[in-house]
Image (cartoon, rainbow, N blue to C red; front, side, top):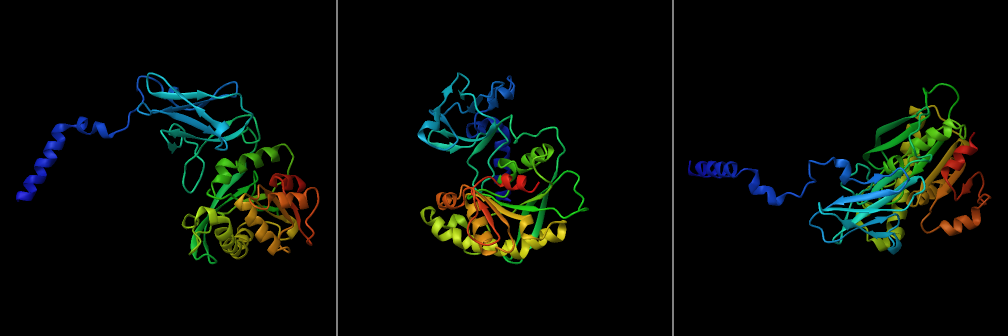
Length: 340
C-alpha cells in the first residue's frame, strides 16, 4: 500500500509540473508562424540548390555535396532564427548525394524525405530535374516486390522486379536484366537512387529499348558468418567480398532465376539474360557471370572496385576472350538498347 501511494504521488507531481518540466530535453523546433518550406532544402528555378539545416545551438554546420573531398565541403551561414543555409552553383540535371557536418557529427537532412537507402543511413539525396531520372508523363511500368524463401541462404528474402507498361505475361518471352547494388546499400538503392523504374519508363517511351524485365536482388546475403558489419573495413574486399559473392551466386542460380522463370514469362537463353551491377554489385555480376557462361550472354559492368581499370583495358569496345559472353565496362542501359 505504501508503494502504491508513493507511485501515485510521483504521477501526481509529474502531471502538476506539466510539459514545461521536460522542455529542456526536447530539440528546438522552427517557428510555427512561418511555413515549413522556409526551413528545408529546395531546388530553385535556375537549377541551383539551397541547402538548409535548422540547428540554433550548433556552432558550425557545413554541407558536403557529392564525394566527401575537401573541395565539396561548403560552410553554411546561420541566420537569427537558427537556420543554417548555403546556396550552391547551377547543377546539371541529376540525382545528388549530400550530408551535413554539424559540430563534427555527420547528419542526414532532417528536412527531406529523400534519403539514400543504406544499411546505415547517413546520406540524403536531391533531384535536379531535367533527365531520364524524372517521373515524366509517359506510360509507366509496375514495380513489384517479391518476398521469397531462399533455400540457398536458409532465410526469407526480398527482391524487386520492374515490368514494362501493360505487362500481363502473355506474348513472347521477354529478356531479363539482373542488377546488383553497391556495398553498404540496400535493394531499394537501385530503385530510389538508381531510379531504375524512371529510366526504364523513359527509355521505353522514347523507343530506345525493347520491353524487358529488370530484377533487383539484395547484393548482401547476410548469411551466417557473412554479415558485412562484422568485417574490418580495410579487409572487406579481400575477406568479405569473396564469401558474400559465393553465397549470392548460390542464391541467384538456385533461388532467384528459378523464381523469376516461374512467376514471369521470360527468355531462358543466355542472349536474353544480362547480369549487371554497380561497385560491389559489379564484382558480384562478374563472379556469377564468368562462373556460368552458359546462363548469361551479357555483363554490363559499372564502377568495379578493384578490377575497373583492368576490365576497361581488356573489354572496351570488344568482348572478353571467353566463349558465349559479352562484357562491357559501361552502363547496363547500353545492353537494354542492344535488345531492341
